[in-house]
Structures are given as C-alpha cells and as structure tokens.
Image (cartoon, rainbow, N blue to C red):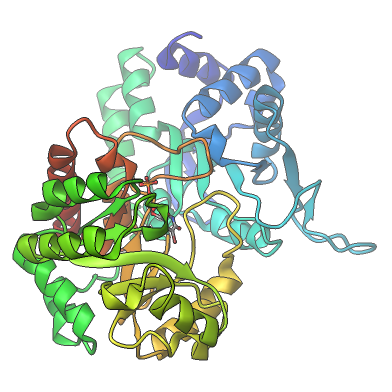
Length: 452
Ligand code: 5BU
C-alpha cells in the first residue's frame, strides 16, 4: 500500500475536509468541517481505508464488527469483507413493528465487537452507541476511528476503559496539508487556537494514592499489600504460571525484590509437595517481602469452597495470603475465606467473557459489602474502597491468540485507575525474568505516579 500520507492526500481530493467558517450542530463556529461520507463513493479508496484501519488492530480479539450509523457503515462493511469479521448492523432507531431489535445480524452473547466510527469529536455519539450494543450481551473493548478531531472524545472513552485506535488526527492532517501548500500558517494557527479552546474537558476524578487507601484500610491483608507497595515503590504482581517447583522457586527468587505479590495457579504444578514447594516459597516471600496470591478462582457453594480452600492436596488456607474467588455463588459463599483476603472476580480479560455490565454491577455489590473482600479483578474502574487488580498487561503483545487481551501499564493505571497490575508471560517467558520484572515495576510505578 502507498504511504499513509499519500493515502490521506487521495482522500482529501474527495473533499472530506473543508476550511472556512462552519456552524456545528452544537452551535459552535468551527474553522473546518469534516465529512467522510464521500470516501464510500470511491471503491478503491474505501478498500484501502479498510485495510489501513485493520492493520492497526489486534484482529484476533474480535468476533464481530459494527459501524456507527451512518457514515461508518460502509467502512465497517469494507473491513468485514477484507477481514472476514462478521458484520452486525446497529439501527439508528428501533424498528416500530416486528422484533423492535436495535442490532441486526447474527451474533451470540459474549462475543466481542469492534466498533468503527468515522470521526470522533466529543465522543458523545459513541457513548450512546456502546450501551446499545452492550445491552445485547455483546462486549465492546476497542473502537477504531478514521479521524480524531482532538476535542476530548478519545480521552473520555479511554478513561472509561475502551481502547481507541485512530488513523488520523486533525493536527497531523493540518501538518500534511500545510506542507503540501493547501493551508497557510495563519489558517493552521486558527485551527490550533480553535482546538485549544474547544476541547470538551473530561473531568477526570483523581485516584486515591496508596497512602490514602492505606489510611482507610479495614483488612490486614489490604494493609500489608499497600505497605509493601509504598515500601518497594511497586505495584507489580508477577503471575508464576510455571509447571515445576524448581521453576516456581527460581522465578520467585529472581523477581521477588520487584514485586508486591507472587500469583500462583498452584494446581498447574506437576510436582507439588507441601514441604518442597510451600516451605521454600514462604521463605522466599519473607526474604523478599512479598505476599502469596493463589488465583484459585473459587466458583462454588460456600461449603464446597470451604473444603477446597482448606483441604485437598494444596491446603491453600495454610499458606496463601489472599485468593481470587468468583462471586457467582453469592455473598455467603465468601464467608469461608477466614484469615485471608479475597479478590473478587468482577470482570475477565479474555475475549468473549460473559462478565457483562450487568454481571459486573451485581458482582461489585457483593464485593463492596463483604468484609473478607479486599478488592476485585477487573478491566474496568471499581469503587475506591476496593483495591483493583488488573491482569492482561503486556508491553510487547496485544493478545496471545488464545483469547487473552493485553493492555499497557499506562492504560491500566491512568484509564481504569488500577492499583495492581498482574503480569505473567511478559515476565516468566522473558529471556531474563529479573530484568523484565524490574522493567514492568518501573513502568507500573511511573504510570501510577502519572495518574495521581
Ligand atoms: P499472562 O501470561 O500475563 O497473560 O497471564 C495472566 C494471568 O492472569 C494468568 O495467570 C491468568 O490466569 C490470570 N487472569 C487473566 O489473565 N485474566 C483474568 O481476567 C483473570 C485472571 Br480473573
């Protein structure tokens, strides 16, 4: 394909941006006007556009694609044809007769849908569209946009936890047009002044610092975690998804100085032994001052969970400082976790997860009210009385081809205000896990400081 710049200039020839004085829907006078609908009338350009947009995306993560009506409908259709991602159609208004459906096409609950938008300004129309899609049980994690007018919409959506991918920004476009002699300095300045004065300010609520969370901690495990975070300048939890005790202990010793907790899936070990595995692991936890988090994801009635927690081969209650549990068994099912902290699973990071909006709301009601719960695992913001733990963090990859979806430390700390990021393969699969842990620790801490 030609360069992005050459491609933009071809699009520009179709008259998609006009400069002058235009009164927008909101009544504001703008020095430019954008209308990307002409792009659909040039099949070659539309096809190229579809490919440029697709190139930016982790396509494995999506099951469906949907354009925000009307301008993005042909774009989403072209992207569907190029990628074989099935298209669904969002109506502007529900049908007045028959099914009254808002979303047309073939889909099932739990599928993840990529949203396509032509232009983003304040992000308001996307905010109206997203719940309509989510109400059908479809999840939305990513939005791809052709042109960002840089008036706050992107930031607002990112703050709500959505990943926004944009092909062009208005500033970038102005630079190209100026260099090509289509705009003079004065016009560029007028546009820049307009943009500076017309950013829809998204009032970001401040996050609480670890010190502030510590002050109101009402659980000993929560207190210890926060104290370790402050002492070590770390918000990193390493996930040790390894298969042997030797690998587990080696990893714990290497990454120990940089982490607040080591997360285990103890049932992955092929050679678990209470003495040979747990005793040295506890020694390492004491040596490097980190906690043990068993990611058991309990999901049963209280009595069974109590048995699983206390007995069996792993006797988790003997050694874990905190455990993860689904809350699907209801409030009382968490009573059995005495003397440990519980991290409730509120939403999952994997593609197609069934933890939709409604589930998350119900899970949070249990989490905030149960005294054993210290926090939640989620990909979205949670009430500030809970600690937020976020897996699905990787600096190098967008996904693993098996449904995992990754974000960067910057995203999880600034956009969803997480407290602790969980990193697995980014560390234990690295050539040098110790250096990788240190790099993640620094990235996580800097992202946290920047989000304060
Ligand atoms: P990864 O290698 O960084 O993808 O490992 C992530 C870890 O976090 C892994 O142990 C998962 O079981 C765990 N996890 C997750 O990835 N996503 C979730 O929503 C939950 C747990 Br809950």
